[in-house]
Amino acid sequence: MSESHWLFLCRPGAERECAAELGERAGAGYCRLDKGAGWLSWHGFAGVPALPVFARSGWQVQASFSDLDKNDRISQLVALLPGRERFGRVFLEYPDTNDGRGLQRFLRGFRKALEKHLRDQQILVTDSPQVLHLFFTDSLNGFIGVSDTADCPWENGVPRLRLPAAAPSRSALKLEEGWLRLMSPSEQDVLIRPGQQAVDLGAAPGGWTWQLARRGLRVTAVDHGRLDRAVLDEWPVTHVSADAFTWHPHRPVDWLVCDIVDKPARTLSLMSKWLSAGWARQALFNLKLPMARRWDTVSRLLAKLQEALPDWDIRAAQLYHDRDEVTVLALPGPGA
Ligand SMILES: C[S@@+](CC[C@H](N)C(=O)[O-])C[C@H]1O[C@@H](n2cnc3c(N)ncnc32)[C@H](O)[C@@H]1O
Image 1 (cartoon, protein in one colour):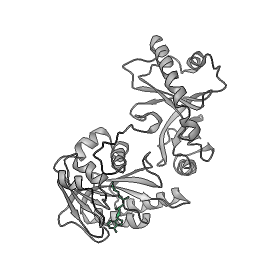
Image 2 (cartoon, helix red, strand yellow):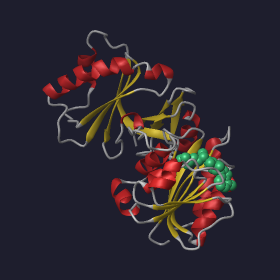
Image 3 (cartoon, rainbow, N blue to C red):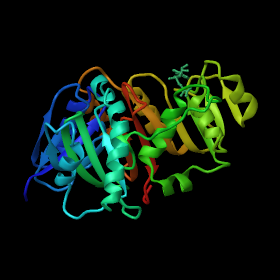
Image 4 (cartoon, protein in one colour):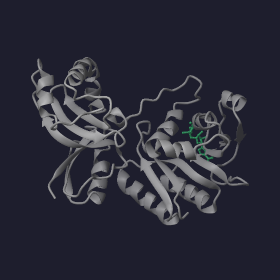
């Protein structure tokens, strides 16, 4: 098989974690990375690599560009586009670093001119599922790639989420991003439904509880800390002041969510206990990461959970809103 080149975007500092996972799981190949760059390249010889837990987005590179002419970037880029392909969307991407974010202003102006040109040439059309990626390492250099919109739904791998003023904490965005990243739209429709029962362990001040409640779920929020008054007054939320590591419900609930800051192995055992005992039918939770050997820790803990729940579908990602943590989703498989 010939060599294929992939580009993965990640949180700056997570490049080695992505490389370690690709090295373990993507078959023959090698990585090129700079620590702190917010992206890395994978050169593989074994088909399409799965998106690593620590990556936000990944696509196959078709060409690279270097030293573009400042006065005519567009014609040079268009000359590098693959064949006669048509695209439904153009993503102008950049590393999530200070330098990368410094490109936003240039890209705003450039986007207008580029999209007009691509529409005029019928390269950008309304009925294509293909995404054209232009990744700029600076305003003159970068990579061109193509993906399917289902594989790369968001520019830079980051869904645009707005924090409503009523949300008790910014953490509310983490749960929303977790659902978007880890579940398909149809899974979200089927699995998150009004009237369901949820337990939120380590709930205060109440961002996740609020997120569940506004979708119509009834929430038991477990935390010794205080919940935002608005969550208790406006929604079907019950506050239980108890230790999340010993409390459990009398009847099974539909959802268990947990955002407790504790040792990841301890959180994982708690989640494993709940799901094995049938106290919750599905779960979404965070695992806080150690300073070093983060992929080793995540991979070992996910394997342990899978061993305890062999028929479950376990998915994980480091979200844009995650810092030193990864978010895990556990759904019962057909045999569970
Ligand atoms: C990061 S905060 C949760 C933020 C919350 N998800 C939100 O959206 O607002 C972690 C919470 O876990 C709680 N916590 C930590 N250990 C706990 C335990 N053993 N039992 C119950 N709550 C605990 C803390 O009191 C804290 O409120």
